Image (tube, rainbow over the protein chains, first blue to last red):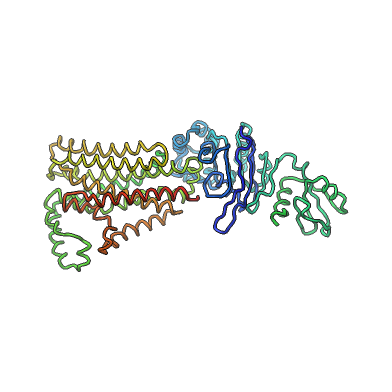
Length: 284
Length: 319
């Protein structure tokens, strides 16, 4: 197995004068759910489009050690806009996909669609948004791909179906598949991601494992008038009544602990994400 | 992937085929009244301004409308069918790429298939449909005339077949050139086109003669050759617009502008070559009984160039 399922090096993408992605490096851990977390407009979708060769870019991207044109059939992709051929019924969609893709399992797709309660003989154009998303997901997950890429896969799904889909994504990594998953919904990422990267304004601000976040990082709330050098810490955020300071350096943690009025807070994905995005020195 | 493309264009092809079939039946039903109507029109033409006369071209042939072969050539191939052929091509071509961009389904395709395979399959499926419609409706002209009881001759079929085989070989080389850009899947479409042309040209006249009619396909097939080339030219042009657009409206508008604009530009003597209609309508076949080879080769060269540009634009297009 490759050390990196996908390797992105110095990826840059401009739309006119707008820098959507600003020279990022990104590595996907094989057999894990790799989440790319960021607010809308962070550059997540552009990064996925670059990986898939859907846009022109500068930088270097390899998938399982190969260029995209060689590795394309080893990838299954669910885009942000889950528009499928709506003149087809699910039954005909399965037939079409069987002819289109050599790694597609018609039986698996039919079973998945039945599990999703999709009417097999009704045109997709008559489906609700959630049903269309379910159709797309059922098709994508019926590909015997090595890498699954999901761009906001649960958008528009009801809570029950959303949980079901998240479990399916987790199951993919449990069966050895690599998943790249983008979302701006933090609880979802927390639920399924093994590794995550935070992207904001075209930059990767942080990459690391989900597990043990609270052990590795410390988040302190300091009195507003405390004088600190923000460059000493991972992120510093000035709030209405306090300073929030995030660090993973043991010496700095010891120093923060000694400051009068300091208070240690829980580091979870929500607080970590908020502090990194609002207070990262690369951004502000 | 052909299944998908054929499924997507099936309804459009059937509707166009039915509409043109109705037009063919109407053309033949009007046969008894044509000579009389044309005599009246000839008198009216004398009073028209010069620029309109120029637009109409040579009207001396109107007196030949009593000849069944000439009637079919001028009223079906040269008018009711021929002049709408570019619109048929437009209706087939414009959604092929533009609809995928417009509906965002292009993500599904391009994330699973390489661009050259997507381009090749889509292009050839559309071209196959265009050529099939062109061939079937063109050949249905003399078939329908004979079924309606008009008498036409049959002697030159073998000579025409020779021309047709040369034409098909030429088209095959055109398709092969496209296929060299990528890998396989070209065979089904090429085979389909060859079968359609071969089957209808060989067995069609045989069946007509077995039924007791005597039919000449020579002029029809010459016009068909020109129509196929003309249709391929318009197809390449409209495909380029389809690839460049992000919605389905612009290709239609641009296509209509081109279809209407080329004959208008062609009214200027120095730019008369820009008007492909006399070629597509088979005016050289009607007037001289020969294929306009110079225009045919030139138009094919432009078509090949356009096809290459189509591919290059598609290859670089961001979605």
